[in-house]
Length: 98
Image 1: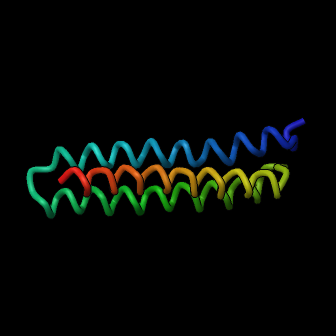
Image 2: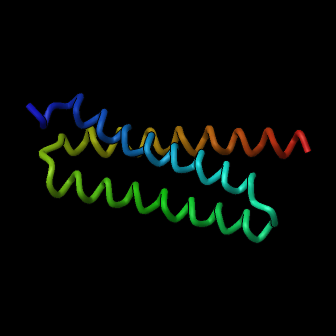
């Protein structure tokens, strides 16, 4: 049954995994940029694309998939917070290293 609790948790987490992959790609593009404005542009585009992925994933899943709402939203927000925590830890590490 598609509306199972586990399917909802995996779908919510999967959306954040996709967002994290985009973060890695945009970070790589920013590191390869030849100037600071180009690096900032790659970073901002990556942030906007990640936000779009999460919002569209949330809306589309809740609108057209019979997911367990609480499990889906909890997994999405939990994985998103975990992803942001890992990203902040990485940034903090780079700041201390510099």
